[in-house]
Structure formats: structure tokens, C-alpha cells
Length: 522
Image (cartoon, rainbow, N blue to C red):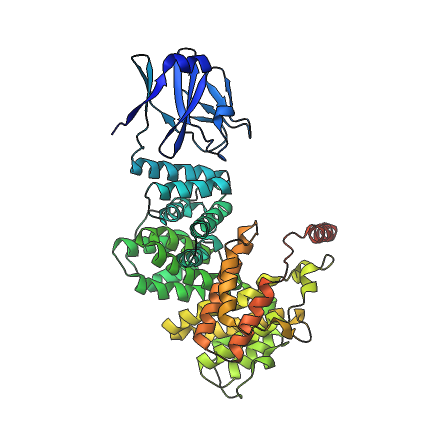
């Protein structure tokens, strides 16, 4: 409904050229240009500087002199810049200027904010993403709808399927739910959106098949194994169309994720986080998320086919012997891949007990990671080992514990894959761990580190998302494990990781390795 207000005599406006008046919270700028009169928000939608100090150019382009953003007052289009400037209808009645200051309908403002969010993501403009998400919520929009919108619209733009952008999203949602302030809550909503934008930046659409087949878990596993994306997606489409429950679909994805030692554990992590994301955002994202997950597993690398891990499928094919003694976590430190696999296959104890031991060994390895390895500039590509090679040991463990609790037949594969992590990282350990990383007050540690995530200061989303995923995973494992050596090592390892500066760009290393590679080509 229109809300017209008298903004004063038209002659006075024409004499002065422009004036500002207030309508509720808004400052509205009136500009007279020849016989035409325009009304717009006085605050530039970019950073809020006063447009009353701007320059009016021909034919009716208003320039904000702070950052050169330009707005066409006749159409409301942004000529240079991003965010749109709000214009107000103007009429002249009895030589007075009247302005309709009625709010744009809420649904229209929400829809416009989502459309503008897409443009902000296309430009990788983080600041504008934050403004558009805030505008959507200020217009009464459901707080998580912008994230749902981006999941739905960008899923087919991940060429090789799901990435950490989706995997970290449920952790950001959970973090936002415990935020203390409005700006923290907004941060938690924008971070996963910005990560989706980063991972799909400039990517065209890679459409999923629309074909549909009746759901069959065995056929789905076979399609994944043969890297048949159309076949696997068709079966998944059938499941979603026929209302097959997520409870039934989840073990099928877990089995596919752990069918091989693949993608250095990403598949198992993604298979857990995908369903958490659906739980957090609702059924409307189930299709996009699960199709993306299936694609990522299909394209996953197969580390069990390279020489370093070739023993894995051979050991897996044997039945667990359980003839050896129980082992302490420290007994796994420094063992080769093959030795670690052999020890896991023969050690006594329940699957859960073995898991606890291997998880603690993984935490000890993190505490002993030789940081000089991450900083090297003159070694071969095979020695490009960094923090993420160690943090994945814990986030992978966190994921497989859930998978194996729900589908116990996966325990043996999961435990042997944890052995592969340990053996692979063994050459890059210090002789002993620094005891200074152990934490006295665990609850205070988690509370402090969760608050710190809202202002992590890391530009590349892949690194910030690992921080939130790592902290979430370790907090869950500590709650599950209770007090004791396992929890102490988990928290200490996380403390060291979160408080160690990480080198994010290895220019000299990449140059050295490029030269070595080209020289070897002959």
C-alpha cells in the first residue's frame, strides 16, 4: 500500500538542486535534474556514504564519489558497482513534491536479495554476500534460506561433485546456533555461502541426468564402482522420487565411501556431512546434495591402487585374525604402511577398542608432525605433506565411527584405512611431542576456539573450513571418549594445529618442483 508524504515545495528543490529528508529510519535524497525529479536512498548501498555529496552526470547518472559507484536514476540500475540503489516513486502535486516511502513487499525484497546474492557469488564479492544475506533476513526471510538457495542453485556447478563447501556447511550452521551476537550469527551464515561461491567460481553447469530408475542399493553400488554417473544418479533420482528414506540411503553411501581407500578419506567425511547438511537445511536440498555426493565418490581418487597402499586390499580380503596382543597407541607411531596394516589386522580387542587406539595414535602423530616438512622448498612432490594430511586422520576417524556404528560391517575397512593414514605420515614425525600443548580446562578451550572461528582471518575457505570441521569433530570424539588419554591427546593435537601459523602459499616450492618436472621430461 502506498504511503505518500509531502517533501516540500518543488521550486525550493529546483533552486537548491537536491535535499535530504528523513522518513522513519531512512534518509531520502531528492534530486532535481531539469524538469525531472528523482528520489533515492541517500546512503550508497555499497558502504553507506552520502549520495547527497555525489556527482550527477548526463543523462541522469549519480556517482558516489567515495568508490565511483554509479546509478542510473531513471531505471535504478547500477551502472558501476554491485548492490542496487533503492528509488522511490515521485509526484508533483500543487507545486509540492510527494514521495511514496512505503516499504517494498517483504516477499519481493527477499526474492531480490537472493537474486542479488547470486550475482555477489558470481563476482566472489564477500562483502556484498554479507549485505544481501542481511537484507534477506531484515526483510523477514528465514535465516538459512540463502544457504539453501545456494546449495540448490550451485550443486550442478561442482564439476567433480561435493567439496568441503558442503561438508563444512552443517558445522557453520551449528556454530551459528550457539553464537552470542547478531554479527557472529551472520558470519556463520555467510561463510558456507562464500565457500560454495569460491568452489564454483566461473564454473559452468555440469547437468545431472534427469533419468529415473527404481532404487536398488546393489545396482547403485555397482554403478559407483564402475564410475557410471548417469546410472548411479538415475537410481538416486528414483529413490528421491519414490520417497525412499534417508535412513535407507545413508548406508548405501557409507559403503560406497569406504569401498576403497580413496580420496584420502574425503569420501567418508563427505558421506557423513552430506546427511548432516540435509538434516540442518531440510528435505529441499536432499536431491542437490546427494547427487553431488554421488558424483564426488565416482570421481574419487583410488589410493589403494598406488604402490604405497597396495597391501591394503590384500589385508582387507583376509579375515581379521585377532591373534596378537592388544596394542597401545604409541606402538603404532613410526610404523610403515604395511607394518601398520599387519598390526591392525592381528591386534586383539573389539572394533571399538581398536578404533580408540588408532584415533589416539592419530592424535599423537599430529602432536609430533615435523613442521619443517610443511615449509620445505627443495624436495619432491611426494613430500608435500602439510597439516591437512594430519587433521584428516581425525576428521576421517570421526566420520567412520558414525558410519561403522550404524553399519558395523564397515569396521574392518575403516580401521585398515586409518592404518593407511598413520603409515603414510610416519616419516614426517618428530622424535617426541611438545607437552606444552596439553590443555587443563577442555570446556574453556572449546568455547574459546569456537568464538575464534567467527573471526578466523583466513581468506581461502578450504583452510578456514578445516578449522571448523576439525574443532567440531574433535569435540564430538572427546564427548564420546570421556576423560582419559585419548581425549587429552585429541585436544592437545587440536590446540597445536589451531595455534600454529600455516603457510598458505608455497611459491618457491612450486617453482622448484616445476623446474624439476620439466627437466625430467627431457
